[in-house]
Each structure stands twice: as structure tokens, then as C-alpha cells.
Amino acid sequence: MSGTWANGRRATAVPRCRGAAAGIASSDAGHRQMLEEARRQLDTLADLGGDFLLACSNTREETENDRGRAADSLRDLAELATEREMRVGFEALAWGRHVFDYREAWRVVQQADHPALSLVLDSYHVLARELELETLASIPGDRIGLVQLADSPWPRGQDLQALSRHRRAFPGDGELPIERFMEALGRTGYAGPLSLEIFSDALTVMPTGMAALQGKHALDSLLASQP
Image (cartoon, rainbow, N blue to C red):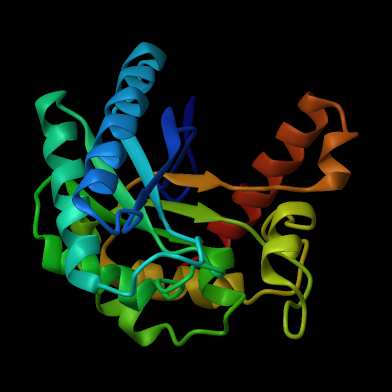
């Protein structure tokens, strides 16, 4: 579903599959296994009517710290997606084993250099690590495939994965500087979809319709505050 807000920006629920992870292969056999799993993910995505596969950075302890291998994996994944007229986005998880910073994810995407591959930005993963935003503002908007928005309590000193899985909040309902993230994003020229990415124990007990209305109100308020 999608909607157009007063300032012309769109918030969209994007049919996609999450789960493919770049850099999981530490051997040729592992690489082949990753590609086979990716084929199944893409088939499921086609069944759902989607065209965008989100690949997250790896969290496994045994993952090699090898940007070249990660770029090669993502390039092969993007080529599989191209065969199906689909696209792939790469996202750095804040607790990733080696890629936990959007700047490193962007370097990997650049090195992979495939037209079907783009960067995915999640405000939580960027702001929870208190990363600078000048680099984000310099990324060309057409190389960003999707932007996910979420707030949270102030994360310093907390387990970032546990906080993300249980206490994310709608924009404006937490303590992250979402407005600064949006200002930097605006400087990229990005004009694609905005997606709420909210994992919250509180929302699991809330009626779905009420949660959806709260989410829409939060997005309306955030977008209305942007120049």
C-alpha cells in the first residue's frame, strides 16, 4: 500500500523478502549455498508480487572480514535478481559482525558496482551507533533503494540488538534524532519510498488498526516538519 503526503513524499509498504546476507560464504561451497538460498528467496518474492530483496550484513562469528568477498556475493545476488527483473538492497545491521556502519555498507555497494544493487538505510541502525551524517548526505539519492524509519529510547550503553527487537518506536515517540537523519536524507535527493520498521513488544498487544493509525500519524508529523 502507498500514500502521498502533503509534501509530496511517499510512504510505501514494499513487498520484499529479508534474510539474504552478503559475506556469509567463507568458501566456494558456502557461496553456492548462499546463491541457492537466494534463488528460493527470489521465487518467494515473485509469488508475493514484490521486486525488491533486502540483504542484511552478516552477524555470524565465523564470517570473514573481506569487503571484496562481500561485494562479489552481492554482485552475484544482484545478477540473480536482474534475471527476474528484480532489485537488491544492502543494509548494515547495527550489530553486524563486520559491516555495522552504513558507510562500510556503501563502500561494499560501490565496489560491487551493479545497477540492480542499492543501499538500504534504516534510521535506527544509523542513529543507534551515533554515526555522523555528512557521509549519508553525500550519497546519491538514486543509489539508495529503500529508507526505513524507526525511533527508540536512547541506546547508549544498551544491547542494540535487544533494543531493536523489542523497543523500537514510531518516529517522534523515542529519543533518536530522526529530524537530523531526515535532513541528511533530504540532501541526497532521495525520492523513493519510506517504510516504518518497528519491532515493539508494546505493538504486539495493540489492535492492528490502531497501530496502523499511530504509524500514519507519526509519518505525517515527521514529513510535515521537513522543509
